[in-house]
Image 1 (spheres, rainbow, N blue to C red):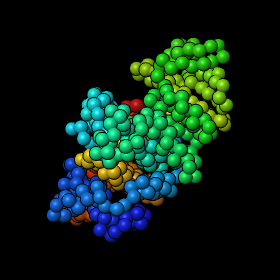
Image 2: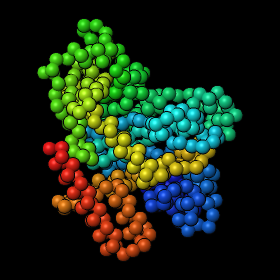
Image 3: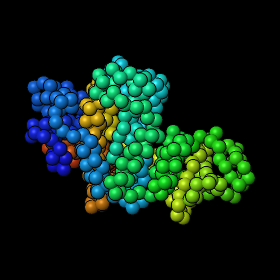
Image 4: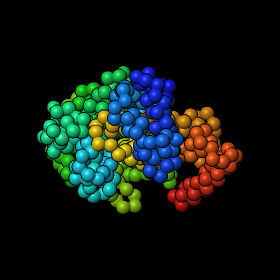
Length: 408
């Protein structure tokens, strides 16, 4: 909190922001201005609402500080930037950017807000470092509606890949360097995003649809038709990284593409051992890279599937009850800060304190329980909390050993 203190014009909103961040890290079943204000000992939710709506502080500058905090503490020369979107199901029609559309969060068409996030993923951990809200055309074509939600009247519609490009360029313009970007089919199927990454000299492994057209020396083919020409000996069994139940092994094959753009362009295909399901990735790199490295980059895309549930479950990322854009940006930025704190503490614990063999390493969930129970608001003695922590981790260690034996 001291790192971001300078962006508050007065001491009162700075102290209240600290209470809000602690509330986001708390074990409250529902996190909003009302519940957090009660948890923090305030008489009414008005001051928390004032912090999000009218107080003088710079959410964009704090977003930049979150990025610097994450990169500094989770720094990894082989880190990957992951772009993905997530939806927050909302009621009503006045919350900024809300519209009926499909969201993977609900698995169906729902009234929801959708935002694109940029996640920094390295060996030490992963956390979101940037965010952009998707504003639908139904909003950008209605200046009055934009004005009521705190948006500029000249707000223009931007696709998810365009928002991803803005965040990636903002990350690179600060002087940070990464070798790879990855994302799902929404981003892999956008030629403008791929071209922008190639101009910046950034490699990418982006998922594409089976119907994507691929140009080879023998002609242009659909991705699913091209993979049928791959001989059996071309498939290699490699791990895309560790998962909750062990290494994620798939069969992988690579097909060279004939693209006019400079650099190496290839189609990467993965095949599931059990189901035979295929996944396709378009990849580009300017320097030599082994297949194992590119498979690891493709596997990094699943880090975002861990980041979103963690940020929503532990830091209340999706539980805001606000209507205006400024309030949304402030809430989401502080939630990103709260989750980044957990990710950094977890990385430092793993680096400096070896875990006993009969326990799993500390997780963000366990760090949140201990931090709130022991440091912020102890309801029982530390010995009681620590004994419960050891029991949970011991149980999880036995479960993991069972999963590994079953896999072997």
